[in-house]
Length: 180
Image (cartoon, rainbow, N blue to C red; front, side):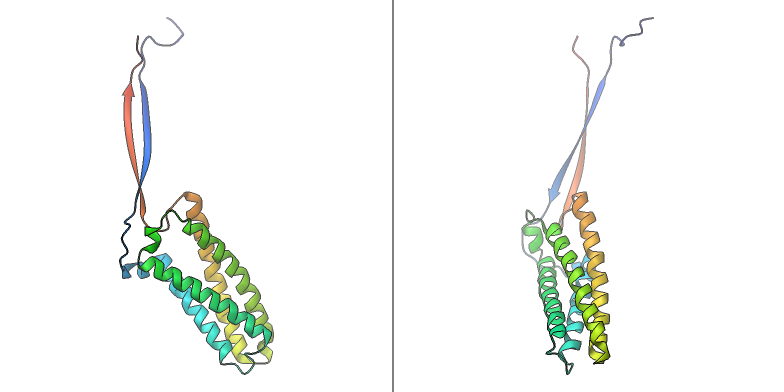
């Protein structure tokens, strides 16, 4: 028996291609609000607004700690609110070449750190006014939600997921035999 290669063999090649399916038309889709990322954005917007209101109605709202907290809260409110609208109207899908997940990951990471600082400063000032203590609670909640969202965005960006739309994998198998 010959211990070398067999006289004949078959090579199977499997090629996996991925097609990206996006719809470039702008349309209102309220079902996004019922998705997990949509619910996270809604919670973030609500927490930003509640923290802002707590500081604003306080008698010490003009204190620098209150100003910093309100800056963080309103920055998060507007950025997250605008993103929510972009997702609801599928504008993110229309501009799918923009790295939305990376942008959101960077924003959520920065806002997690900003809320850590703002809520800590508000909690320290809570001994002077209860409104700062309540704002600190909402700030720490927002910090956790933004941190969790940053982690989800990191995982999604690392796996190559789309912010909106979908990847459809296709497998094509071909069988070839060597020429003699």
